[in-house]
Image (cartoon, rainbow over all chains, first blue to last red; front, top):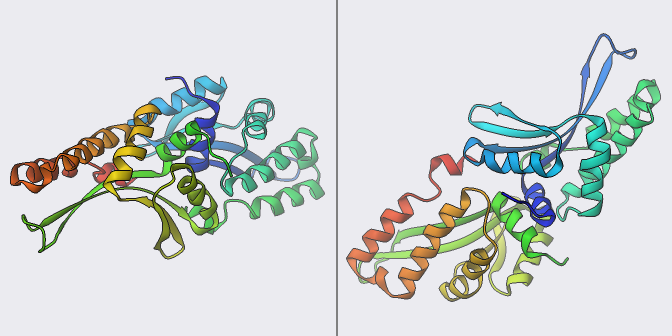
Length: 140
Length: 140
């Protein structure tokens, strides 16, 4: 299955999620770990679409999400910064998901600069993450 | 907002629905009405995408679905047969939604031929409709 960029953009407008997780991690100097991830979830019957996304981007993993749902997920900052984010900068999302994407790209850039390792940067990222995928957008 | 065919295909792979409703209708000779519809539902914050779909296809309506959800909907058999179905024949869906689409196209063709007005055709359509958008796919 060969995917075209506009198909991917349309599919991600519908099914994709740009998420920034912040979780306790004792080994981090500030006690928290920032985990940005790009994820697309599908019923297992459409797992071939997730593999096609993985093949297209040349990064990420296809895993069981929960139950009969599978996910294509990219977490490596290097792959997010050099593959995923440039793709969606070039092929603009048409739904309001584009707003989450911009915030996501900001957080990844801050992490690349190491700003998440200082309290001020971590606080800024927490503030940005709080505004993403809010209840209203999760309901979609 | 200008849409490209591949974006539409990707978005509909995620968010679209091909549905055949069969409901009681006393004025129909067999007592039932067959109602095929193509529908895309979005949160009201993305209503501009639904209007862009309406503009692209040049048919259908944008309406409140329920609560804060809006829908773009095409029900007219003429528009389904001459606009929507040819589009998705040309731009093939990549998920298993393509199976629902093929069944949907079969039902619309049967209706164009008037086969839904005879008991045998109506029974066939009911059988096809029962296999579409089953619980498993509705959960997606």
